Image 1 (tube, rainbow over the protein chains, first blue to last red):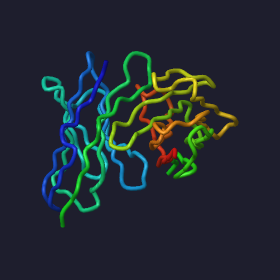
Image 2: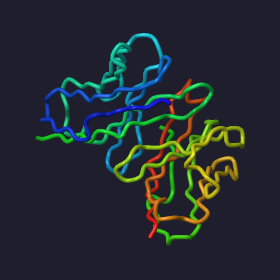
Image 3: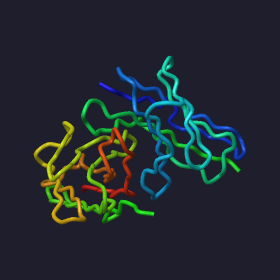
Image 4: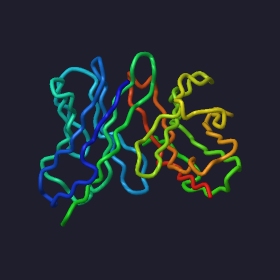
Length: 114
Length: 115
């Protein structure tokens, strides 16, 4: 069965600092990978996705992620964090076979210090 | 920009009562989903719906749960007899095609509190 691990439950960074949020997945075939962000009182918003092709994908709000098959990772990065980036970030994988199910990680809560 | 809307944003209900959570998916989308997130836990898949029938469901989605698309715009999740452990944030999502081809757009969620 597919699974997603986000090892960091909470991360605090200073505004302007770089950010990397970790995501590891377990899946037998080439995965479909996603990063979603949830701001307080908001729904889940897609930041970026990887289906195939270039392993470095660019997303909205200045985020990027790199798919590394050898490490089963899809880490999210941003060179310079803004206070408005404070939110919860979810990595997701899927779906398998003919299904439509996304499997989410437990999320990483990002706090930005001014 | 089109969006998925969910109502209500917060619902409190007594244990054993029936609740209906409502969602208006993006108008030209064909696939619909419900997910839930118990506080402090992962976002979990409940069910997907296509062509007026359930296409996939998780083990969580037992006989207490049902989904319906009663008209051309709404997509509802009904919990027949709520339990304390049903307290969670419930997310509706929709996609133009299956989740392997296109992204799913999520609503802002309904927080269900069972007391």
